[in-house]
Length: 179
Image (cartoon, rainbow, N blue to C red; front, side, top):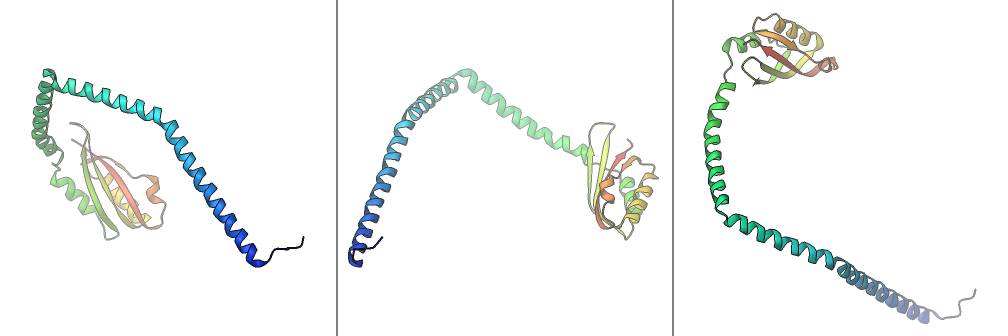
């Protein structure tokens, strides 16, 4: 097909096309916004009514005598629990020096300990968790066997996943302590 319009008219037609297209796009976006607000208006009204009802109920409950008594009771319970938390943490922090010494005497230069954590579940069960890096598998196994020979420990648990790396492997050992 042959183009019969001169370039000046082509530019005018092109600019009118872009102008009309932009008007159509903006009008459709505007109409879409109006339609969205019309369809969302019932949901907004319902949620605002529910919000008002909940606020009214809350003020009624808050003004009730039982609520103020319960609030005071909760505050005093929190204060007592805070005071008691000081005593509950003290028992779990006590670890015998002999236990720590038995671990440290078995540590060789090939074993580097990064963490020792003590957990007391109840009066009979308490655990030590050791974490660190071992130079190689053999030194880790030797360390574990040395810990198993100690009289303070009932069980030394070395997961098989700790033996995956041949060198410079991280390890986690769980030790059950006799009461």
